[in-house]
Image (cartoon, rainbow, N blue to C red):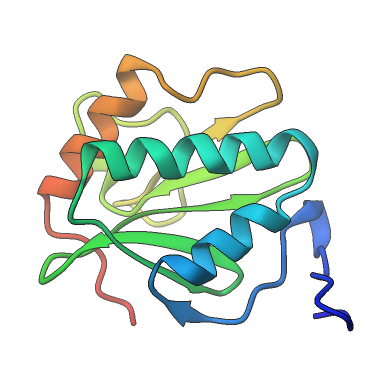
Length: 139
């Protein structure tokens, strides 16, 4: 992190945020997302909170994570130069699965580009389904 409260932006404009549990580090991450990516991060966070009121939040590896207590983590997102990548850790089991494949056979991605709508019926369905399934328990 840069001095004086400034956040360092890594490759693709991804904020470098110290790991932490709870909504505060996720809020710091979203606040530091540059330009249009900030609006995507805010919309994703609001959508998850609306659809999963009991959501747990954390930041690890400079990415916000969303989970349900006792069920693991179901989603995360990360800034890249031309899109925000939303990861669904058990996305291959969702119906329909998110469009982007992963090296991990269980994970699937959604790439949200500038101008894309975040609050879509597909995104709502993926969030609801993912939160109801056992998630990733990697930390």
